[in-house]
Amino acid sequence: MNEQAILPVVRHSLHDVLVERIRDMIIEGQLEAGSRIHEGQLGLALGVSRTPLREALKFVASEGLIDLVPGRGGLVRRLTPQDVRNMLDVLTALETLAGRQACRNATDTQIAAVRHLHDRMMGFYADRQRLEYYKLNQAIHSAIAALSCNDFLASMHASIQSRLKRIRFIGNETPEHWAGAVREHGEMIAALERRDEDALTEVLTRHVEATWTRVQPVI
Image (cartoon, rainbow, N blue to C red; front, side, top):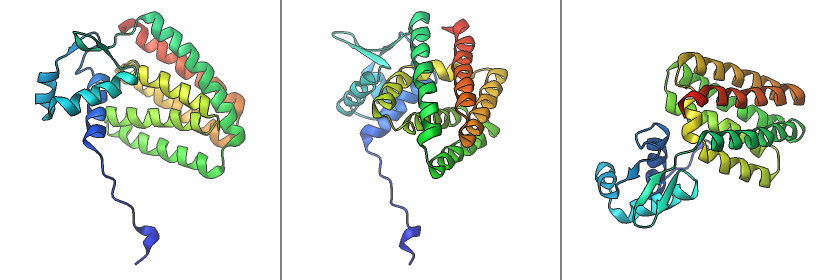
């Protein structure tokens, strides 16, 4: 038996499953911004008791997706247009710095791994599986941040990205917006593969600014 070909079985805890499901419900708008989370109803819908549900909600709150208000429970966080604009400005600075550092520091193997994520994402785009496309889209942005080899930058990037999950998801609601984002991602990967810092910085800046243009009318 070739042991190198054996992949370990990945076991997901109930906590991890609940956190991901609640995130997805917020991203897709099933739990609307500003709405109260009724633990009893949500627990019944998910088939879990209140204890694991509350622990999952606490974790999602730590990511900035919900607010836990004493006496009122959880409220899905509603971002103001100014909140979104401010976070996108910071995100632009972080992603462009990360892109430059990635061009300098990433190995060919690491860049090939980002290309693999992109190719998988394009498969979901072809099948119009929007949520799965979105998750790989975000994984690509996180991967580029990680390739900066700057843990503090990557941590700040992850914090902002988690708060913008719903916002960035709705940025691709129309076919035209989605197609535009896909083109920008293609440019992004090509620039990274060439290690072209200026080109990658330009497309990352344009990509984040396009997010603002796409979401501003609906927030």
